[in-house]
Length: 173
Length: 110
Image (cartoon, rainbow over all chains, first blue to last red; front, side):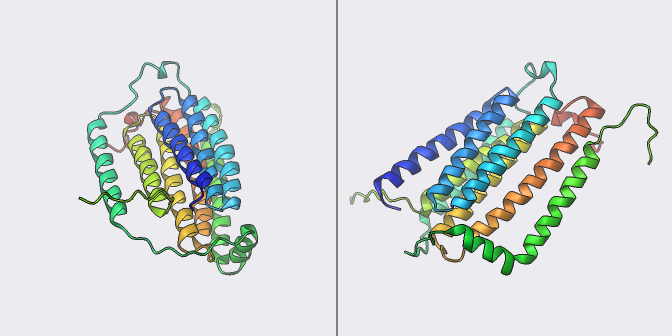
C-alpha cells in the first residue's frame, strides 16, 4: 500500500475512527454515544474498503452501522431515566483502568514496533465475494452451520428473556 | 548518529497500532462506564478493533486464502448475537430494578 491516496486515506480514516471512539467513550448522553459509535463503525468499514475487503465493508455497514446501532438506540430508549444526566459518568475504578489501558498500549506498541512481519507481495483477487462464498460452503461449512444455529438460538433467547410479563398473569415457574 | 529513515508506506504495523488504540479506548470504556448499555457498546468497539487486525493480516499476509476475512464474518455473527441477548438481559433487569447502573446489579454480592 504505497500510493499517495492510500496513505492519505489511511491517516484520514484512522483520525476519524480514533476521534469518534474518544468522543463516544466520553460522551454523557447515551444517544450521542450511539451516534459516535456509528461514525466509528463507518470508519472501520472504510478501512475494510481500503484493505480490499469490499464484502466485509458492506457487511460492516449493514450489521454494525445499521442493525447494532438501531438495537442500541432501542435499548437506550427503553431504559431511559430522567435523572441519568446527574449521575456520575465513570465508576470508582477510573485510575486503575487508566493504568491498565496505558500498560496495554505501551506493551502492544512496543511489541508492534519490534516485530517484523512476513509480507507477501500478492494482491487480493478482484472479486472477493465469489471466493468467500465458495470457501464458506466448502471448507468452513461446519462453522457456517454452527453460526446459523447460534443466531437462531440467540433470536429465540432474546425474545424469551425480553418478553414482557403481564402484571396480572400467573408466573409459570 | 544515523537518522532513521521515515517509512511512509502503510503496512501491518500501522493497522496493528490503530487497532491497539481502538481496543484500548474500548477497554477503558468497558472498565469505567457505569451504564450497562454503554459498556455493551464499548465491547462492540473492542470487537471491531480485533476485526480490523484480522482483515489487515488477511490483506498483507495471506491475501489468497481469505482466512482472516472468514474469521471476521464469524466474529461479526457472534457479536450481533451478543448484542441481542445482552440488550434483552439489560431490559429485563431494568424492569426489576428500574436501573441500568452496573453498580446496582449486586444480587450476587455478600
